[in-house]
Length: 128
Image (cartoon, rainbow, N blue to C red):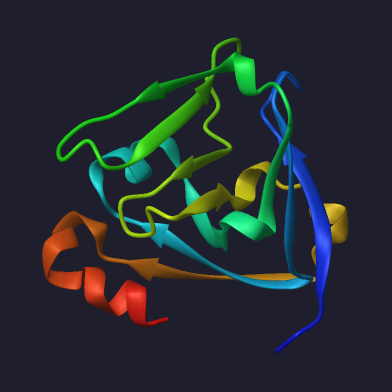
C-alpha cells in the first residue's frame, strides 16, 4: 500500500475546510447517478479515521433523498459539496477530489461508476 499523506481542501468560499489522509497518487470515481452527474462530484472514499472537518461544520446544511441514507452536505454560503456521507459507504466519507488542494496530489486517476444503475452496480464499488 502506498504511503499516505495529509491533503487539505474545502469549499469555494473557504468557510468549510477539511483534511484527508490518502496517498499522493489517488484513484477516484466519477458517478453517473442523478446528483453526482449534476454536481460534477468525483469521489475519493475515506474511512472515518482518514477524514476530518477542520472548520465550518456549523456552515453545512444537508440534503437527503431516495432512501435518506446518504447525507449530502453543502456549504450554506457558496453551495459547494466538498464531502458527504455516501449511501455506498455509510460509515465513512466521500470526498470531492475537485475540492482538494492539488498541490499535494502527484496523480489522480478517475474511472467511471455506473451510478445511474446504482442497485445493479453497487457491489462492484464496495469490492474495490
